[in-house]
Structures are given as structure tokens and as C-alpha cells.
Image (cartoon, rainbow, N blue to C red; front, side):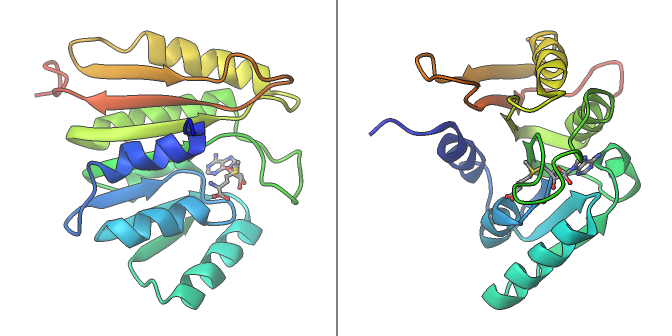
Length: 187
Ligand SMILES: C[S@@+](CC[C@H](N)C(=O)[O-])C[C@H]1O[C@@H](n2cnc3c(N)ncnc32)[C@H](O)[C@@H]1O
């Protein structure tokens, strides 16, 4: 059976993670991606602005005995205050299911976070962005993230899109980014 975008996002990141890696969950939510990363990496940083997300994730990690996650109750746009070099990162855009649907990821902060995460990414490191865009405000964020990804320099990043073409409504899709080399201006 063909892989769903969410499944491919995990496979894409798993290929570069090992027990020496540092990984980042930029949108912790209920902690499913955090757990996935924590099982593969040495250290995980997980961000969310909602206390509910931090608590849910904390409980989930405790139940599973995973102790290698630093939960950060702050916006991912401040990632550079907490994180150094990373091997992989995941963004799951939109709102937290079964919570306040007005608390959504927003274009400006998402793009700030993406740029900072790409700056922190090691060569060969990867970022998976799951774009949910059916909610109010989702289209603006989708357009902004697509424009950002399309404009990444091809000598520095490999950027791929994985998207259902014949599904009704607004199915989520996946943007995959791999860092090929450092920005020569920054070195
Ligand atoms: C689609 S949910 C994430 C689902 C999550 N990956 C999971 O496995 O359950 C999006 C999350 O992004 C969070 N969020 C919104 N703005 C944010 C920001 N500036 N920084 C970090 N998280 C943010 C929301 O609170 C919400 O929990």
C-alpha cells in the first residue's frame, strides 16, 4: 500500500537518525512525533506554546520510560535560544486535535522557525514538514511555507513535495528538506 505523507515523514527522518543524534519536534502537540524521535535519537527537544501539549507529551514519555526529551514551553521561533546542531526536525502545522482550534501555527513564526532550524541543521540533516491547511488560516500558512521551500537554494538544499492528488477536501501533504552544504556566506 502506498505510504501516507505522515508515514513517509517518519521514514524520511529515521534514515538519518541514530543513537548519537539530536532531533527536534517543533510542534509537540500530543507528543506522537516526539515519541517517534525519542526512540531513535540520543536527545530530543520538543516545542509547543500550549501547556496542554507539554503535559500530554510529558505523560506519554513517562508511560513509555523515555527520558531523553527536553520539553520546551515556548514558540519554535525561539529555537535558537535552546538548541545547537541538530540532525533532524519535524513540523506538524495546524492546530492540536481535540484542543482549542484557534491556537494554530502561523506563517510568520513558522517561517522564522524554519529558517532557524535550517541554520541549526547538520550537513545531511533533514526536516519534515507536515502541512495541514484545511482550517481557517491554513491556506495562508500553506502558501507561505511552499514559497519559502521553493525558494531555498538548490545548491544547499534538496527539497521534495509528497502530496495526494485525488483526495477530496484538503488532505495534508509533506515537504521534505535535506541540507546539502552550509551557506557559504555563513562560513
Ligand atoms: C498539528 S499540532 C501538532 C501535532 C503533534 N505533532 C502530535 O504528534 O500530536 C500543532 C501544534 O503546534 C503548536 N504550536 C502553534 N504555534 C506554535 C509555535 N509558535 N511554536 C511551537 N508550537 C506551536 C500548537 O499548540 C499545536 O499543539
